[in-house]
Length: 347
Ligand SMILES: C[S@@+](CC[C@H](N)C(=O)[O-])C[C@H]1O[C@@H](n2cnc3c(N)ncnc32)[C@H](O)[C@@H]1O
Image (cartoon, rainbow, N blue to C red; front, side, top):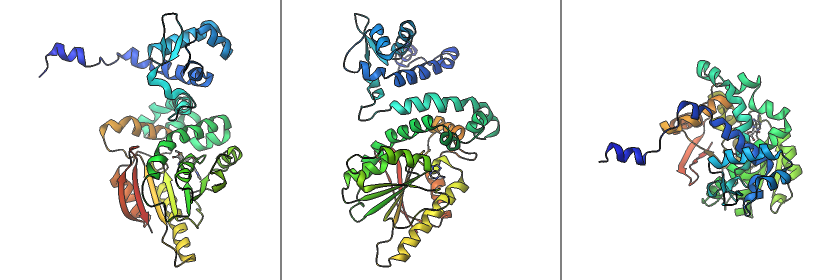
């Protein structure tokens, strides 16, 4: 058993109230660094703040303040000659890093942070803080703000890539010809699966503005097998898939909205099976991060603020209730290395 003095030397001191309240400074500074491309400029070569100011066309004095602020959090390391280099723990700020979080940082520290202006309203009423702050829902806001929407889509893609790798390694793809991703964003999740399974074709369903942007940017290897189709996934989901996918979508919505989406997926699957009686019955893979521990509280609070009224993080029992209410059978449950839970379902 350790003594009190042992404890004080090994346990990090929690920040004091003023320090914690000021943490938004670092979040916003990080987003500005991401927007200016400072990680890309300092990843392999240490540079002075004057050089960086010239390269980013920013005010030298202000940029020096920004760099020193971020150096306090370890984002940049400062060498003996006062030059800045990207810190080891922040390599993922680089846009080309294999696990890049560049757009996630911008989204979190800008649009989402702005929505947290509605937190007091959420805590008082349980309603969406996003709506309190912006007067509209997240997706209506994004549809009206294409630059913010492009950042959102890229952020989702950054978060989806490692999950696609983890799911692609799972058996069950060999027998499938067509995968349909419901609310699949800019297609990064499907792309990851198509790259790993060259026989597979994919249809990505999302809102019209997301599909139009993604289709315009497509053109990489494998994209010939990827189609973007604008759809309201609460209303109609096309038949013809062997595998239907729902990833990081259900936890964004209330029980009633989630039920609508799953009912539309079930109808599509039933229609597929009825059109070709000999065909193997389609499967739905629900890939969601579950909320099961007290330490999930910040993520659950986040969902309450950002998403529609009535949303909260789902635990496995709640997800199963939703699936059963949509008259889907759960065939299996497994946990991916990414931390997501996969529920395999059939009508
Ligand atoms: C949290 S994002 C997840 C994106 C993607 N599944 C992933 O995990 O990267 C939710 C997605 O649902 C889409 N979405 C929201 N409402 C929709 C609707 N009514 N019809 C189609 N897609 C919708 C959003 O545009 C967004 O791309």
